[in-house]
Amino acid sequence: MDWIKLNARTIATSFLALTLGAGAYHAGGQTLLAQSTSQPESGTSASMQDWWKNAVIYEIYPRSFQDTNGDGIGDLNGITSRLDYLQGLGVDAIWLTPVYPSPDVDFGYDISDYKNIDPQYGTLADFDRLVAEAAKRHIRVIMDMVMNHTSDKHEWFIQARSSRDNPYRDWFVWHDGMGQTSTDKGVPPNNWQSLFGHSAWQWDEKTRQYYYHKFYVQQPDVNWDNPQIHEAFKDIIAFWLKRGVGGFRFDAVTTLYEDPSLADEGVVLGKDGKPVINAYGDPQLDNSKTDNQPGLHPVMQEMRVAADAFNSNKFPGTRVLIGETYMDNIAELAEMYGAPEKPEFHLPMDTQVGFINKLDVTVFRSKLIDVETQIGHNIPLLLFDNHDNPRLDARYGDGIHDTDIERVLSTVLFASRGAALFYYGDEIGMKTTPPARKQDVKDPIGVTGWPKEKGRDGERTPMQWDGSANAGFTKGTPWLPVPPSAATINVEAAKADPKSLLAWYKSLIRLKKTNPAFANGANLMLDTENTKVLSWMRQAPGAAEAVVAVNFTAEPQTVNLAASGAGLQAAHLKTLLKTPGGPVPRSLAAIKLGAYGVYIGEVQ
Ligand code: GLC
Ligand code: CA
Image (cartoon, rainbow, N blue to C red; front, side, top):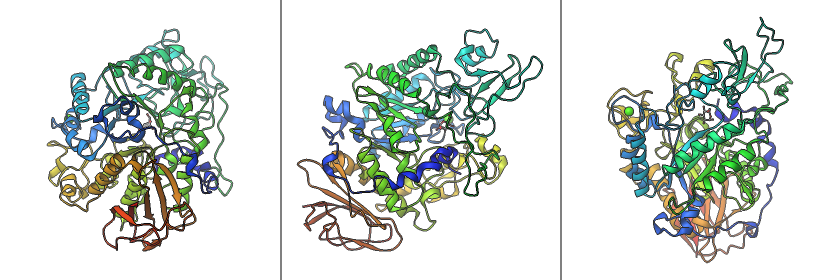
């Protein structure tokens, strides 16, 4: 089961969106970026301000990226040692999943100290060195900011649970049970569930109340109705901004608030009219009272003001706010940007496109049109993968053409307008490798949900650098086993092969950075009735138009983009990038594509 499906509201409504906005749209309605943002080294203030608008962002799961001290766990010095590789790829920023001190129930997402580095990853000095070395390579470091919950080992919670009149008591969400008496704890206040299985309420015997946790029991939700929480998190954000971070990725941000009525959530019913039972054996709830509550918007406005205040000469360059925003539809995603006078996220993640999890041209086109037409003048952030979902092979592959399919997806990712985010290892086609046995599972949901939910270990295996033992990740014993596929799928092998997926990623990123149409051009869908091939053009003022045609099928296809109504003439085409094999097209009227073939050309 994939992560997005943990959120039933997402499944329930995602198909509704397909029927909307499927018509052709007009380039005239497009936002053109004021300026190409591609070259931070140009150093102009406009590019410093706008770097994120065409950014390529690389997600690192630090535990699994590069170990340098032989304990089998990746560390900050490991990331620093791989910065040249990341610069070679062309990334503008790296997002690190949490590296703060943590008891590691949720591998860093249960934070016990927000202003330090966990010793297993290094020290604050190592962090500062990483930021400085990254900056030399024009790479910004983005931190993960977990504001929904702390660890139960965080001092705030230790205080809060010590007595009902402790000053920190109200920093968390406490309620009496239903039917609670002085001798009986009753039952939890309502039917709300943890996304990680079972009731979201945990009885605390010492102070005789329940506390709320949307995630693991060891991740108590903080109380955002308490103004002190707002101040505490702004202080934490300032701490990292002063250290020079390039921004934050806000974790689980839609779960900050719960409905104060404490009303039960609805049960999701299947086609047979019976409750849908999730991987944990519980009825699937609709999350209507615990997700996407209105209070989150003022919080994000506040965080944006705090981050913008650091956008000074001393710390040049926009500090970007990215949101983990699995929304139900494009309208809800649009709200995450805030209003122009009250901005919220710069880049809330568009999970509408990347988690379709099926190579369906019509759905892709409709979702891409949505993000081009329904978010006003804002910038999309596309992504296809992260540390919570099976990798691309498991969600899109057919087991035969996986690499070709990954070329298809990366083309949509990098040749569309806006910022692009990808996950370590995607660039070499790393395979999802879940544990074979329950006793090997590290991510606790894989134990609770086994075998339906095997947890997220499968997408968190060590980065595959070379063909040596442990793939060059560690000289010790890796915390998760290196997949057998590392013998052939690794960075060293990919670098030696000009036709590798890695080479394809690099070419696409270079195109995105250097070709004006791809760097800042409008995005216009072409040939919009075609159900096999997704085609679009990129159009920037004063630059040659570029066209992209992507075959979503295993059969050869031919498209005629001259007839697609966008006013393109059957002009001469200059090939910018294409998948190997097949003829080079001479005109827009007949572009031939092999199985999962991609063609990118410039109209001359
Ligand atoms: C986010 C993270 C996930 C984590 C959860 C709780 O969804 O991406 O890894 O388990 O929040 O913090
Ligand atoms: Ca280590």
